[in-house]
Image (cartoon, rainbow, N blue to C red; front, side):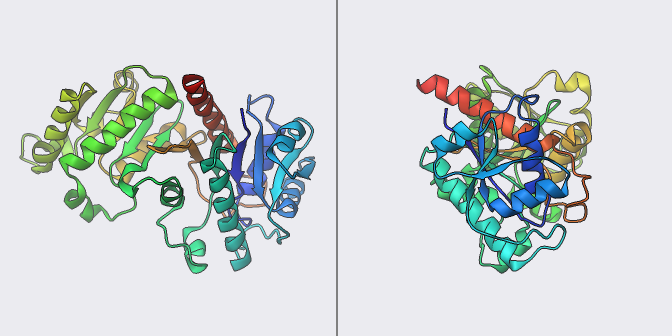
Length: 334
């Protein structure tokens, strides 16, 4: 299998040091070979700043990256850059964008088996001409997928969640929820669980929007007007979906055992339980793409970059999951 590509992320954030830490733990964590895409100098200095003895080796090909992986962290070097933990710069944002673009193109071309994206600063990227809401939309467009079909799932050991709406104000959510949106994104989710996660008959629990799932219209009409018809459409298509369910009783241990993914209506409804249960191991997975793309479910954490406080669990989980999903796809097309 080809190596996994990891875009370096913002060099002032925790991404570079966590890539180095993941390489140190590669055997214990059972990680497939990966190649960092970014600046050799940044990765080298980030590792040394964290107190890690990581030989960082520029490579000229992906075959060389695989051959190098056991003895050194391979990097497709995009050029020199300053390592300034906690101090984001325009130069750093440009490097993060170049790394994202290069790693994405390699994966779209099939030269790498999967893409893992380290955290970036959206505001910093916007200042250098990045016109996408986030990396998910960038990768979706590069993959030839419409924005509405690039679906974000957050996955951890205890829970998988898919928010129907993401980075929008809460007051805007009811106007965005439609039966078509829920049906389309839930169907994409179900197919991805089969293809990439090996779940033969995925079970979807669909949360209501309002308290008590609207309580038969007493607390809002959206649950009966929009969510219930979407669940019926999914069931008619042969997908094991149920809902709308009261969100406040969906996430305890017994309830979680009855479904494979929770379909949520808005950002915090999905991310609060995920982060409460799997804060250090959460992975952002983009479903509906022709490629595998994952990312650790945390940001740049400029405030602790370079302080040795950042934990590598989510980065390791993102790399491991990318490898597992890529292996499943490879086995079904072999």
